[in-house]
Length: 125
Image (cartoon, rainbow, N blue to C red):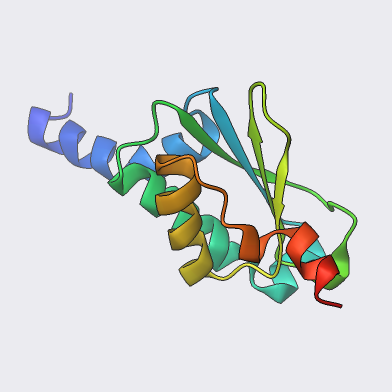
C-alpha cells in the first residue's frame, strides 16, 4: 500500500488530466486537436486552458475537452465555448496568451473576448 504522502503526490500530478476529462458541465471548452489544429499550435493552447482552469479553481463548472476537426482550418487553433442557454462562442487563431485572457474574461467573469472570435475575424477580412 502506498503511503498517504505518495497518494497525495499522485493526486496532485494527475489533477490536470482529471480537469481535462471531467470538470463540470456548466461550461465546456472544446479545443480543436485534429492534425491542422496541432500543426497550428493547439496543444499549448489546450495545456494553457487546463492549467488556468485549475489555477483559477474553475474545474467545478468548466470542462476542458479535445475535439477533432472543427472545419475551419484557416482559423486554427480553434476553441469553442459551449454554455447552457447561450450561443456557442468560437475563438480563432488562439495562442496560450489569448487562452489566459479568455479564461479570465469569459470563463471566470462571463465577458466574451470579442476580438478573438470568428465573427470579429470574418469582419476584418
